[in-house]
Image (tube, helix red, strand yellow):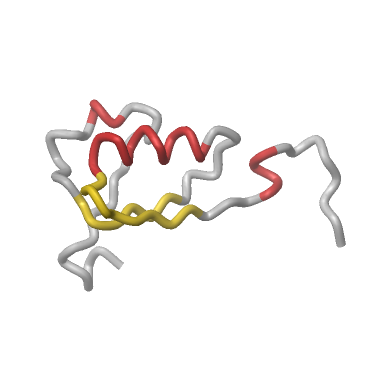
Length: 75
């Protein structure tokens, strides 16, 4: 997607550590989060505190098996 959209920046880094890539990213209007980790909401909140403009928005992709993989999936 980043090849076709000049306003999309893929970040290949551990999202738990936004200080490692904050010099590459300015303030943004929207954050799309698809990190597939049990603490993904915390990770998004941390990144939003660094990068999300006031009145900005976010989208989070939540996968239930990433929250608790010990619970069997429903059919």
